[in-house]
Amino acid sequence: MSTITEASRAKTGISSRNIDCVGFANFPNQLLRRCVKDGFEFTMMVVGQSGLGKSTFLNTLFMAELHDLKNDKSLEIKSTVSIESKTFRLAENDVRLKITVVDTPGFGDFVDNSKCWEPIVKYIDDRFADYLAEETKIDRSSKIEDKRVHLCIYFIPPTGHGLKQLDITFMKALQDRVNIIPVIAKADTLTPTELGRFKQHIMEDMNKNNISLYKLPYSDCEQQQSIVNGCSVLPTNGKSQSHQNTTKLESSKRFPFAIVGSTHVKEVLVGGEHRATKQRVRVREYPWGIVEVDNLGHNDFVALRDMIIRNNLIDLIEVTKCLHYENYRMRNLPQSSFDDDPFTQLERTIAKRAEMEDMRQKRDAQFSKSVAVREQRLMERTLSIDKEEKENQKVLEEKRELFDRIRLELKDKTSPKNIASNLLSALYTFRNKGK
Image 1 (tube, rainbow, N blue to C red):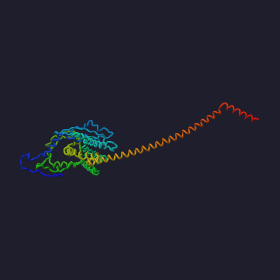
Image 2: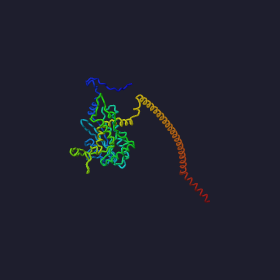
Image 3: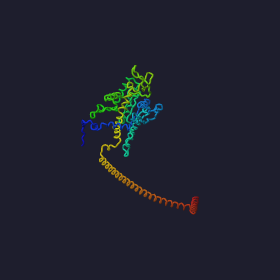
Image 4: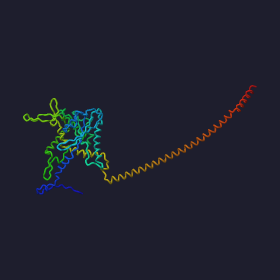
């Protein structure tokens, strides 16, 4: 039995840094170097009806032309829900990100949308199956390519009336397979009052139907500073913990995020009248004015981007790995592989083999019995046929003898001698009657 005792290292009073520090406080830097070296793999799925700005959102989120909006084939009429994935390699400050974007053209665009989410569910399960197949190989690579879907952003049309039945059914079907973050598309079509009421209706519908969304992580290490040998470990981005917690609290209050997407850049005046400066910002232009994409006063795009990429991208990957993927493994791997030790599995295997052998012997005996019964029936049938054949042969012989006798009698009656005798007899009889 082992015990774990919590203890803090006492200072020795010696000023030498090599003696005062063991070095495990440098673990975060080791992880940082490994992450920078290996890079990250992340798969994002966007789901929603056509025309809600999914492609524009992706281009806006990563500030890159991931989708060519001029030659966008997602607006074509589809006969079924299709799955389209594209992989891109992005780099920012020596950090490499391999991002896979999965689009679902045709979702919700039909008259009959029943079970239109099944191809999406199948795609997510297939990616889990591919990873499980690579993981369970005897000769597997040291680094398995991760194509599992880590995040699903579901676009809700800005109707202002709450969730549709399709929205509820889709999220309930996927909530146990992927992290879901709902967003209100084209939020600039609603007034602030309408938008607030719409968000409230959406959250009420989700709570009423027990829909589980991605939850922001709140751990003890984020609520207080960690102290190692009297030295506080600060966040790598230089911001205070109170600021981070405030940002997360604001993000949770903004659920579901109301976003506006655009890649159009325009110079606008920022600041007061005397200190106004021109800045290049992404905007959507209207006859009555502009909507700034990166302005939290206009929409929630910046809060959504920070929540996904800056604060919780690693957590999304970990939740997919430790929760959704493990749920898939439990659903698809044999239950005995989790509950039994190797000896119990061996005993069950031996017992199963004995049971199968006993069943085989019973089936062989039943087969032999059936064969014997059938052979007996065939023998009886053969004897019956032989007896019937002998009787038929006897009748045939009798008929043949009768035929020969009749033929002989007929031959005697038709001879010339008998014919003349018969004529004379008939003439004599006629004369006697005349007298």
